[in-house]
Length: 211
Image (cartoon, rainbow, N blue to C red; front, side, top):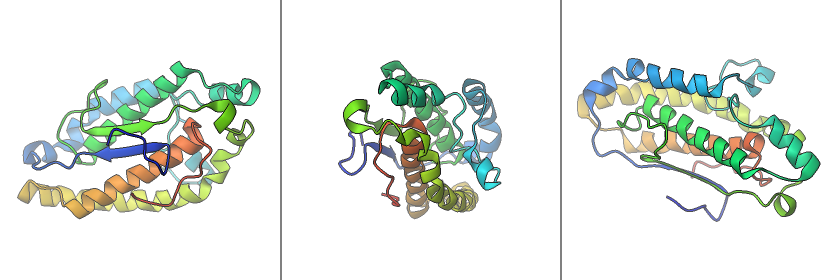
């Protein structure tokens, strides 16, 4: 999927793997460590909205490293979203999703720092003056709280699904398609919430949908 969907100005798709490497799957928890530390170094500090919910989950909704606070100020004061800030946020978001997909066993390719590989993310660059309310970025994180609460429990389900899939892959070399679709669907839902509340590229409220 390389086009923006008609229903929401952000999309995520991951190519379903025909066969997965059992050996690298078995050692995935160790193999992901170097690239995960690189991601941590890139993102720097972490703004964790889950702190407000007294939870410890930050892998998906972490905004450290993303240009967020300056973007809020630019939209609020000048109604602008600098293109290079958008490009940086998009590139870092794509990289973090490649690392996440690898950690969740969705793909075998080691995450690239610059190539999209099998993870396809498209986000529409906003026409700020015509498409964005200049005051809404101040409260979007609050408006997104119902989504974040639901996503917290969905992330727990994803962890369980990943453990089940790990065992199945070790025996069959295949990732169960139904579980794959669910995990990608949670990632798609999470992406839309992130784009709305933290990347601030749309005022369209995220749908409660996996598709």
